Image (cartoon, rainbow, N blue to C red; front, top):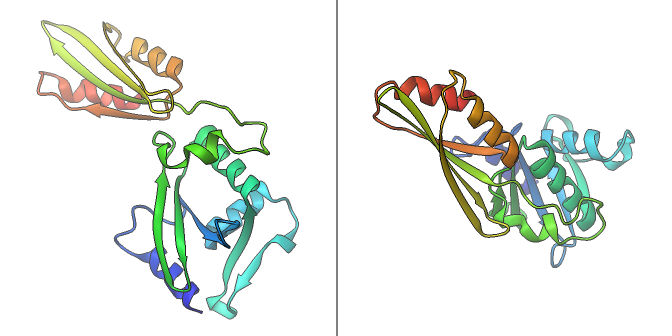
Length: 211
């Protein structure tokens, strides 16, 4: 079928942003997004993690080696999966496709630190006991070395509340303990470490990335 060919091209495409194991691709079906389907390895993951042990929820498009695993999610379950993947586990990128047949287009994408595209599904949808959770902020970190002093600058962006915070402090520990505490307090899932030309910047940036 046309969809099977499209999906396999999508997964194997060299222009795809990541492998099938790290990207969960949802396909909007029905009028006005009545339900969603997930396919291939992602379908098996969703089935095992969120739909229970029953194999009745798995369908296959096609036959033999060309068969493509598929599961369906209603609006409420779709929102629950998004919350767990993006807010709790923070281990996948999510893409939402709209279209039909073999013509589909990615209309939304999100990662644990970049949630804007799915604000409504994550924080306004009913049917989940996780509704109302605020998304984690995104961080940017820069480390400066000057006069044998290591100064750490941290900025956080809370897209949900539209708040930007920034601070700087001296971190004398070799492993950047103060920075680690700052990251833990914010609950950030993504962090950008900025490069500098300071002496010893490479080692300091490496320490920041490990945090």
